[in-house]
Each structure stands twice: as C-alpha cells, then as structure tokens.
Length: 320
Image (cartoon, rainbow, N blue to C red; front, side, top):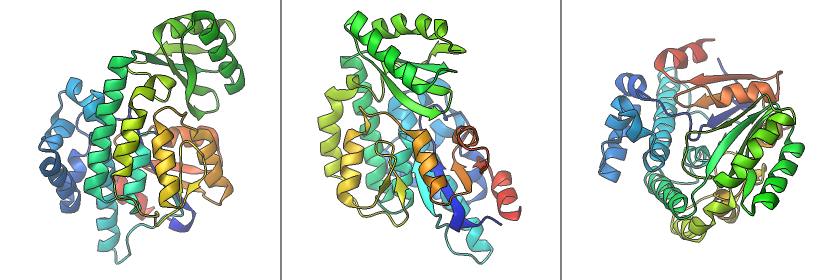
C-alpha cells in the first residue's frame, strides 16, 4: 500500500501520447469512462475515439494531443480514486503534485485549482494558441543528451548571436537530458557544435513548434486572457510549478505561472528536487507512457517512481 504522505503524483506532457491510451482504464472503471464521455460532450469532438483508436497523425497534432493527455491523466486519477474507494479508503491526497509542461494543467485540475470542464477548455485553447504561434513564428526543438546545462545555455546564446535567431533551453528534464527550442537556423548551427562539445546525441524532435521559447510570445497575451477567464482556486495539495520550481499556493501565483509558461523553460529537475527535499520518496506518474517516472529516477536514484498506464499496474501498485 502506498504512503500518500510521502508520495507525489506527476502528470506528463506532450510526447507521452500513444494510440490506445486510456482504453483499458475506461473499459474497467466507469468513473474513468465518464471522464472521456464528459470530454466528448464538452468539446463536441470524439476524443475518446482519438485516444483509443487514433489515427496517430490526428492524436499527434498539438491541438489534439494536449486535451487528449489532460483527459487521459484525469481518467487514470478517477480510476485510482475508484480503486481506493473500493478498498474503503478516501480519495488520493498526495503530499505534492506536479506536471511537465501541459501536465501542469492536469495537475492543477487534479487538486481542485480548476474544475474539469474549464480546465479542459483552457487546455484546448492552449493547444490552439501554441499551434498558431508555431505558424506565425516557425521553429523546432531538439533533444540533447550528455551535455551539462550551463555549457548548453552558453551554446544557445552563441547560436542565437551567430545566426541572429532564437535558441534557448526549453526543458531541463534530468541531468544529461535537455531539450532546446528555437528557429531552424539557430538549431542547425547548434546541433553539430553540441556533438563537438561532448553531447552523446543531438537530435531534432518531430515537432513543428518551438515550445517554451520566445517564439511562443505571439500567443502569450491571448493565453493570459484565457487563464484570467478560467475560474481558479487555491490548490488543495501543494503544486510545484514549471516556471518557478516552487509551490503554487494562491490564485495569483497560478495566474502568473500559467501566463509565463509558454515562453519559459520547464524546470523539471529542480521541481523534482524540491519535492524530494520536502520529504517525497515515491512518485506516481498518471499517464499513458512511463516518461516522467524514468526522468525522476535519473534525477534521484534514492526515490521510487512508477507509472499507472492500465488497470493491472494500478492494482499492483495498491497491493504492493
């Protein structure tokens, strides 16, 4: 049985999607199935079918990926709570929650800072605005493995200056695994240099936007308006923000955090370290693929990290 007093729930972002996600959970748990049905009604789009059956090309579109992950993560949480209730226990109340990029909105919805419906509409708008920013200011992202963060920041500054373009560190995922984001000129300049300077891999990702970079700025003001129009409450559980790597405890803090999120880096390493320093020893990822669980283990080998993807994993976690 998990000790929720030393556990954090974490919610994944783009890159974790996969066709079939949530199908087994929805088939076994009515509460999870209702999350998908509710989302279909709210958006007027068969997201349950997109998640369960694809096609992958449709699921992988930013505009669809973000709501699909939000829906799936919260459906898995509903299944977890149903399983706890069946065992005579109260709903999952962890010590902390956090989410990676889009997952931050899933985390906030999970702890009552946003209701499901307005949160889903905000996620859908986030996907639309990020796609729109990508059309106005085209760019790309690249994964860099095996290069320390500070030399990589210096390389981004060098590439930006040399090309007159934009290149920044977008995701500090874990030691030795970083994502950079910017325009193609600066990326093409930086990637061979990264390898020359010791990177084990420097590979462009299959995305058409430069997320978490200044190239998202064209949509930032409109996204802030969307956040301001979304009812927000203080989270019932401490929630670590991507931008600050600190707990978000008030409506004002959440507003500022989300408003800055599109153009700010995801400080995932620092976020996990903040939770570990606060006493978290177990991490549970609620998502369709064990991405964050792997990052957590690389950040701190002394903690445990698992992912709930299907009913068997959920039951195994509670019976361990």
